[in-house]
Length: 406
Ligand code: HEM
Image 1 (cartoon, rainbow, N blue to C red):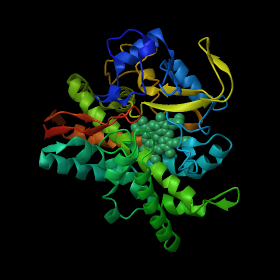
Image 2: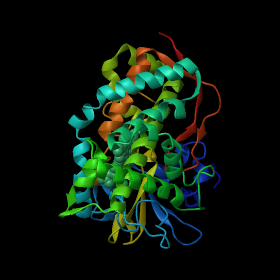
Image 3: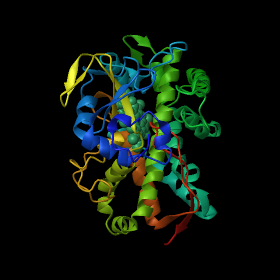
Image 4: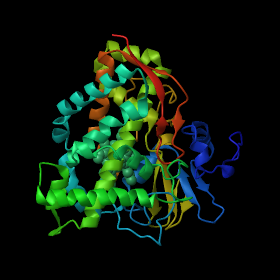
């Protein structure tokens, strides 16, 4: 699709090449203006609706009765009928979803998350210290990726000596449409998921013998409707928590630091007034939007903005576009650490609202504090490489010279 085209009918948000250099914000702006309920035709006849305006993304996310997460999943492509697997919590509807969510909610309450603060701050001291000592580093791998991955693996009770393979494994699970990681033309990276499941299985065996004060042991002992999780259910929880808990926050940290480089006055402003930290974190989440979209399936015939949607149609909610909606955000393309209000939708909304939102905010906070304490700036030292994906809004590499000015 030529980017200069003004005809929305030619837009294909299923074309991952459109996302090869980050989000196509100009295409989103055009859709919001000219075709906010946009039918994305596909050559094979299997099209989907694109929703790009903030109120529509919000309304659909909130209405799990009319828009199902369970009916053929939450990715644009349908699940592979030849290799079916049971659903993860994120692919369930109430009441099943409600039961599974109650198993993990307890581990992510504001109080439990706040209890991780000292551990996270200590970890980040080491991460930032090591990167500063190196000076030239890949900010994604050496800094942004380490904190969220270590924290979720620590929460799960994975021994520190076994954590090394997870950076590459999480990339492979999330980067299914990137040639560096993809296994198929379209669809999930089944081999990467199987490796993660095999790891989860070993962890479950270990925890069965020696339960600890960790989330894996908790999940293995709790019951849903009087029954314990099956081994496969446990594996899928592990896969969901480790991938959802690492790639996304990594993108927010790396994208946030990049935004501060693009808007240096915002870094100075935050350095002078740390009471802006909570607002700055929301703005990083809005501006970087680590997940571009999720998909729902309409459960009944309905209308959005006068357009008829039929039961069974795929409806894709584009958070990256909603977060730049000019009707909701003043000057949406400006990065403003004091932006209030900030109704960013990066964590989705409704029943599937991100389980790890408090944790992600804590991780962003400790990272920003460590960088602010040193007035550390990341000077670009090579081209940024994005994940070729219309789902994960991630950078694969961001070479920088990390320099502490104080
Ligand atoms: C900046 C970081 C993050 C972003 C942008 C993000 C984004 C999202 C979004 C958009 C959803 C909604 C899915 C839907 O509506 O279908 C979601 C759900 C979820 N997130 Fe996050 N996430 C982040 C961090 C985390 C962390 C740290 C964890 C930790 C484990 C986590 C675990 C989950 C889980 C388990 C769900 C599914 C919740 C459910 O189905 O009820 N996320 N996340």
